[in-house]
Image (tube, rainbow, N blue to C red; front, side, top):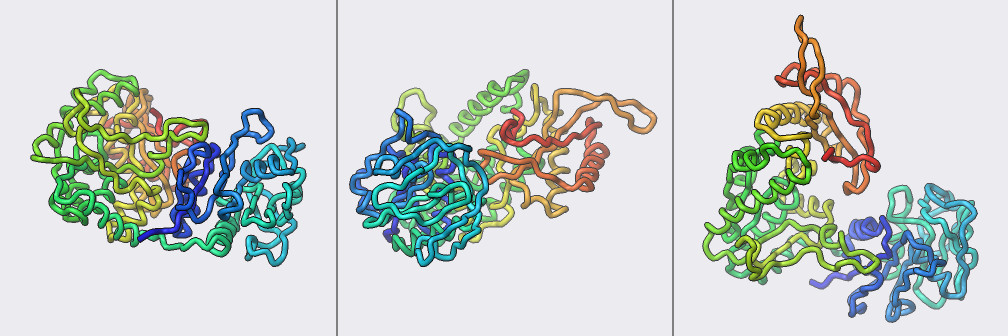
Length: 511
């Protein structure tokens, strides 16, 4: 089935992926392409959105999209930089704003009986993020909305289906942003909202059957959402021809290897669990530098996976849980590399599994869509709701060198914290949580004895995509209970601290 598509041209805004996700939430399929790499056949798209940008349209280096075949031909919505671009180069004027227009604002004027603003009234909150402002509208421009500080907050160009706004409808702070996008896409551009999880599953399974036929596919499971949903889609398409490998690197959460393995088997997957804990710990012995630890884990994983994959006869495909942000991550609006995922056909010197053809059933989806697709296939809610967990596992949550004893301590601490979050009904309110074992000992008192034992830090953050994150204000009573439980139950720890740093400037992980 052919779906109507929306083209989003990226000018380097930090919010571009958010535009695509908001459009997808309307059950409309959207794609992001750099403004200077517009797809050759724009007829495939029902509407076009121009994103914001950190650039100024007044600079000598201003980004110039080739809008031939788009402007005046297709419904177009220009956001922020896009709105200023249309004004500046089409008979209007853009000047530096007296005050940087950033943050919340409220519409003070809204044009009545305007379909673009249907359901949006004066007073509606919007989010501004620009240092330039439109002083005068382009030729045939008609004012649609203003805020107290921004006269030309929204306009349209008469004689075209072209609309422009100087605020960001894609961020949650714009309270009627979703309504505005729906007005433009569904009511004005007449895009059919039929991009649903059920439709995706049905069409993807059919496409995988056609692509893979009777071929064998190998997939490395991590226990995470992406690889698990990819596995279920492939399982629906090719059944026993999918060979899943779940490697225990000895750095997973407490009892995770056995519990996740059971869960996979309960899903009917053809899965082999490989306990390579000792091999990973040997490779990590004596390494303290985070980058060296990551490289050692990556190298051993490749060796273990290759050993297992070569035992499966006649495998021709490697499946990956690649999702859409992975694909577009390094596609910059300034002409960066356009592909981050490459297949490794017949390249000498690579492990055997890397010479396989690549299949990526999730590469069109954002993380929240992956979860919705998994839910539509009836997958376990607990698996779909799992917090992100770093590929190197607890190795980057143990600061300094890795030993089996340190892993044991951190697994016990982490289990108390995560189980506590579940018991207090806090787990689903947190985007990611974990414990960090610090490379310091502290003096303590237990009974009548002085102790000199380990310090652990607890970390819990709220985020939508990991790009930015705020620390979670967990209840004091919860933190008190968890701290007591850790110190009383985990031998080797006598002090617990809570990390209240946000990203930026701190990162979510400590290494």
